[in-house]
Length: 211
Image (cartoon, rainbow, N blue to C red):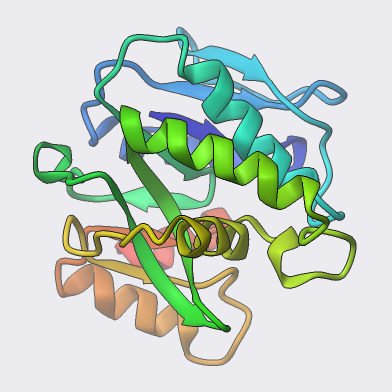
């Protein structure tokens, strides 16, 4: 499992690491950035990939692809890519993975997906090849929907005609809990036994959700 982080997300990553450990992955690493320091839990390895910036043209799609590219040189059967603001309460059932899995978050001309993004090796290779083609085609330029990794993931799967498995976990997801009622909905989801919650940024949010 590889967890994307950034300087501003460092403290959240450290708070959330016990939840990432619940996945019981054979190996877990942090994807940091090349230009700014990202805090990493003690004993955890870090790969520095890409600059520390948010949605800016093809930057985040390229960071996603470069991460897959580097990790394909490692030995694994299933790869989980997650973001630092994600809480894993119950492990993703990777033993039931068909090829690629995620959580649908909305629809444009195709579905887009919030993390975690989960791959078997063969599908990761195909995704990487198609992903670079999508970036080179200019579909992730500044201001494009596909500059978001959520949308980019969906676009690449759509161009591959690759179905995305959606039954490996349950998830409550928001980009952030800044809309009225979302934090309460996240806590309700936790109390109802949801497997994953995405969007938790602050210590107060974490405490409120899990109290």
